[in-house]
Every structure is written in C-alpha cells, then in structure tokens.
Length: 202
Image (cartoon, rainbow, N blue to C red; front, side):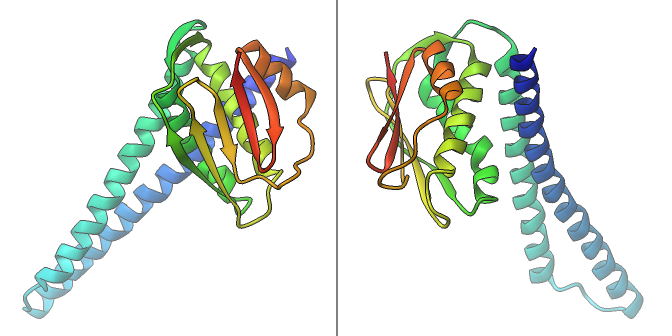
C-alpha cells in the first residue's frame, strides 16, 4: 500500500507541475488575444489604422505560447502512457530525455538547473516504464539535495546503459536505502562518485 501511495503521489506531482505550466501558457494566450481585441477596438473607434508590427509581435507571442502548451501536453501524454504496461521494451535515451523535462521545474524551485547532458544511444531494456520514471525522479531529487544552489546537473546516458548525473558536491552524502532498493529492482546499481551519482546497468 505504501508503494502504491508513493506512485500516486509521484504521478500527482508530475501532473500538477505540467498542468500548472500549461495553465500559465494558456493564460498568456488569453491575455494576449484580449489585448489584440482591445487594440483593434480602439483603432476602430478612433478611425486609426492598426500598427501591423504590434499585431505581428502579439501574434508571435500567441504562437510561441501555443507551441509551449502543445509541448507540455505532449509530455503529459507520454508520461501518462508509462502506466500502460508493467513490462515493456524501453528506449533509455527517450525516457531519460522525457524524465529530465518532467523534473526540470521541480529542480528549478530549488534553484538548480537540470539538463540533458550526453545522451548516447543506450540499450533497449525491458522494465516497468512508470517504475523507471519514479526511480529517475528519486535520483534527480537526491542529486538536487546533494549539490549547492545555482548548480547545474547534467544527465548522461552512456552506451553501456549506465546513467550518470554530474554536478553534485565533491563528497556527497550517502544515498537512502529505499532508493538503492528501487534501483536494484530495475537492474541498476547506484553509487556515488566525486561530483556525480551513477546508476550502473547490472
């Protein structure tokens, strides 16, 4: 029951974060379209022409935020589908890139930048995709807690399938036992290096 609750909390956290960003993007679209309507209404009342450059700039803002909202919706959709199958063929590169995008905002709230580093074409593995994302979330947050503010964490995928998070403190504190167990369940052996956390594919 505790594991199920942990999974639900994780799913809710990711959904809330993405929907919050989508709401911000859509709010900008709504405000900008309202401003365009006001500009055109004022121009009509005063018998003036509408400045095409101003409209072009506002249209570009709407297009940018619409594209952002579509990207967020796409990531939410991809994440939601990780619960479809308990055992599935998983492309590590694709899922690591998605996990970084999903966790970037949460890391930024701690004043830490989380980015994709060198993502090689790692091996395809068979596992529970949702459990993999939960593990990556736990690993990313553990890494955030083991680096200073204003730090930059880079996530690498090596050809062997090893995952490495760079940017930690030179001598980070040990990892919680629950994280180690979750990693081993998915075929990874976690270890701390100087300034990095590694998930070694076993």
